[in-house]
Length: 95
Image 1 (tube, helix red, strand yellow):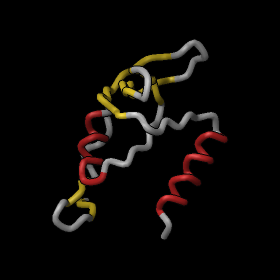
Image 2: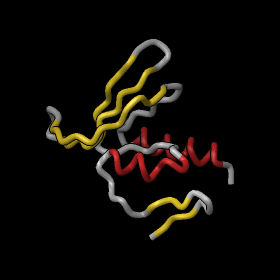
Image 3: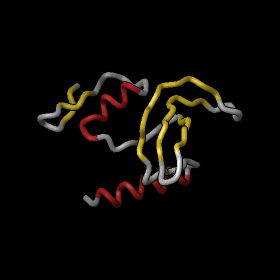
Image 4: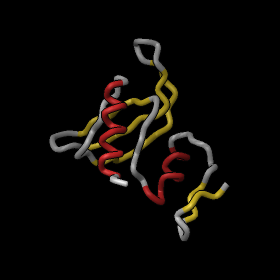
């Protein structure tokens, strides 16, 4: 599997659905929030990140991150469920 191509395909689909993709930015914090925007949309996550020139805060309904073994911990910090959990020594999910 060409994971770089899979990632580019996900990004293209996301952008076609109206989302924005940020690359070359370091995520500094993720926070579960409950807010409405001016169009009536719900936002569940606030992300603070720094880019090549500045810091930015983005409110999101959904996010996709490449977090490896920390993915379950990151999901929980954003209001996600505790299950499934990643089993570090096997790289699998624990139900």
